[in-house]
Amino acid sequence: MHIHPLINTTDELAAFTARLAEHPFVAVDTEFMRENTYWPELCLLQVASIEEAAAIDPQAGLDLTPILDLMVKNKNVLKVFHAGGQDLEIIHNLTGQVPSPLFDTQIAAMALGHGEQVGYSNLIESLLGHSLDKGARFTDWSRRPLDKRQIDYAIADVTHLATIFPRMVEKLRKNGRGAWLDEEMERLADPSSFAFAPEDAWKRLKLPSRNPAVLGRLKALAAWRESEARGKNLPRGRIIKDDTLGELASHPPKTQDDLGKVRGLSAGWRNNDIGARMMAALATAKPLEGDDLPDREPRRPGLTKDGVLVSDLLKLLLKIRAKESGVAPKLIARTDELEALAAGVRSGLKILGGWRFEEFGRDALNLVEGRIGFAIENGKLKMSRIVDAPVEETV
Image 1 (cartoon, helix red, strand yellow):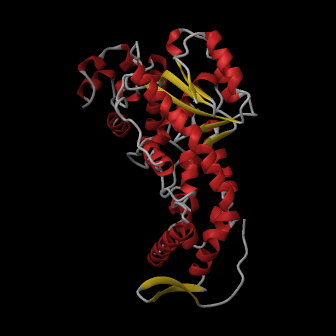
Image 2: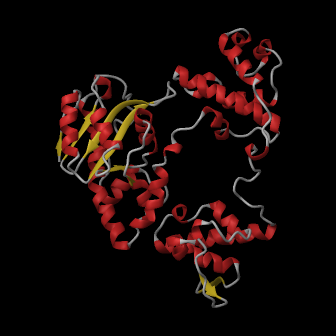
Image 3: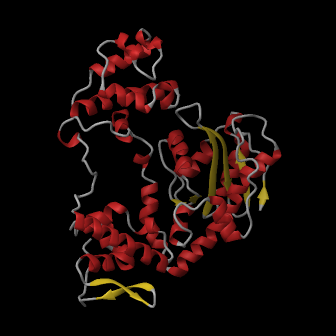
């Protein structure tokens, strides 16, 4: 594979991108910094085909339009990432769109027996038989100039990714599991994962109470903080920390002067502009009502004591089936689905349709409805059929 020098002109980037567009897939990775900013700062963009690879320097003043168009507009080229959530977020911030079509090798690894959330280094070592150089992983990627070792380290991620991707696809094709990943990739590409209104920021916080008035104040304060952080391009915690936000929602100050008594705020909040803006936001707070109130157990029906035991048996069954099939349990079923099945839900569950039903759902339904049970044979735990009866998909 040909490795280019660092690309730092628009003409070089346009030519490189034109060649990439001739290939069925490209491997993509980014280096960024976000310790001191709200928005992640893109410092380096690495891309590789099976023939060539390069690192692109966004800080060189070049126009990124060619490569960004390849990411979000060219539907003929598959974009391959590993654990690409933050990479996708950066591209979404720059374009308002998510790369499409896309493939995440970390998710694919779950279907190939590599476990849940396998690290990139471990995946490379497993598939290629050698370890990665980790010497530059703590680089401040915003500093210039970057030396050759740093650039080589960054590019190596996509050259290895371009090598392992075809091998993973071949394994998925042989074991018939490629279609299993379609739903997961669609979820990853959902733009709503990366764009949310400030008014929804409170939903990402640990709730201090279920009191409608407290939650209403938390919603107003979280929206205010989100807008402040975005406008100043500062991390949320630099504006005000989560626990302080919760304290203010639970025990609201009556006047701005009272802010000087709040733990986590400096005395300056008594009379500064940001304190005034926060008090103004707090004054708009209204108690949450009806559907806006969070459930006590989101999406989970209440379980009786027996239901908890049944849920535990389902988790055991999931562990057995996942081990037998070489698939990460997380890819097959989530805990809330197991609890719902144990509580009597029989519709709307992913495990009751498609490949999940064949791999796990049928036996799970048989278990909770008493048609199969666990037995010990020669010291090993096995499933024992109690009643023979056909079970069909319900979704």
